[in-house]
Image (cartoon, rainbow, N blue to C red; front, side, top):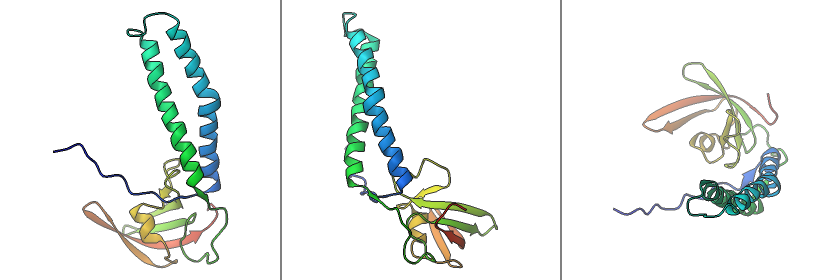
Length: 167
C-alpha cells in the first residue's frame, strides 16, 4: 500500500466578480498585513537566542510557511480565473451564476447559486459549479426535473425558478 493519491481533477476556472474581489482582498491582507506581522514576531523570537527550543520561533516559521503557501496559491489561481460578470443570452436556462429554486420530493424548497469552486463555501446557499447538483442543473429550464446521486441515495428535484439576481 502506498501513500500515492492521484491529483484532484482541475476545478472550473469561473468565478463571480464578488468571489474574485474576495480572493484579491484575502491576498492583499495576507501579503500586506498578516505576513509582515508574523515576520516581525519571528524576528523577535529569533533574537531571544536558542531557536531549537523556542516555541514562538518554531510556530512562527510554520505560520509563515502556511501564509506563503496560500499567497502562492492565490497568486497563481487569480491569474487563471475567468470572471463571469454578465448574464447569459438565454436566462431561461441554468448557467453559471444562476440562483435556482429547487423543490424536493417532500415539497421543501431550497435555493442555490451556482458559483466557482473557489467561492462555494463562503455562504450556505452557494454550490460549486463542479458539484453533482450543479452539473445536473446546467442547461435545464424551469419545470424540469433532475435526479442527483448523493452517495448511496438518489435525490429528485423539480426546478421551480431560475434568476440571475438574488431573489
